[in-house]
Image (cartoon, rainbow, N blue to C red):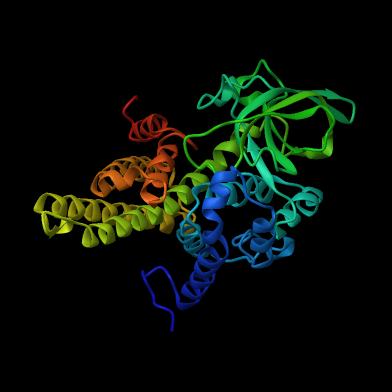
Length: 386
């Protein structure tokens, strides 16, 4: 019988967890260093995940999904860090939790058949394209436009920091259909990347998450049929905000698992490494530092599972998820710094996993909503500005 590691998980959840763990450890982790060096990874990863049913865990069976409850998604997100590549992890979560949820909620039957089904199968790769050079947290400031022209829209503009952008078959693309209306002028399109006028202009050289592509995109008079408008015109901002709760929570779930692996690696190193004829874990300062980290990680895990429970029960968890993303993201940065310090000089060498982890964790305080934005959301929901 599979071990039941937390009250929310059944035996079936744990059997599924073991399947994900085996796949990540046996088929992905051996390639992690190679993909990190290459700055990308092959499409077969998506195709294999699609075959195993990993890309549509909570999506309707009607479109090729598994129709499972949210705790299966939690188990999946917790095991992904075992692939030993945050870049692969991020790329997969873009597919499962950033660019496809809006299709499930707001898409037409035609869109679900043309794009969602092959995305769940791993045959089409997606990206979400919202951020622009002058519009990050301030989504209303985007300048890319879509002008109606009969049965088509003519799209112009640029996007930046787009993960999966160079290999995507389609984009969940945010543009202004009415530039004068701010938030209510934003619309979403499912943009096919084989559209004439679309260009990947530059691959960005990142601090971390190096195994996946992050790029700048250009749109010059791209002619897209109206059938690719996702939901209603002018309702794009609502759709974007609707998806943030899940994106941020799933990121925190994987972040927690990566934190635990980081701590386990550090404890093992401290038990093996000696200084002054003593294992360095036996120095009280080091032991207390590890004890503090373990305590903070345990507290963060309780917060993550509390948020997961709220989402699984269909409750509004915007404030709690914002707290979760804020706390886990900033804890990861502190923990990585302390764990690297405990590795000494070896922590500065790429062959030790803490070196890569130290570079990767910073994104958790920036991507998907910065720590500053999370604090703003929490403060507003506490009624502090009223």
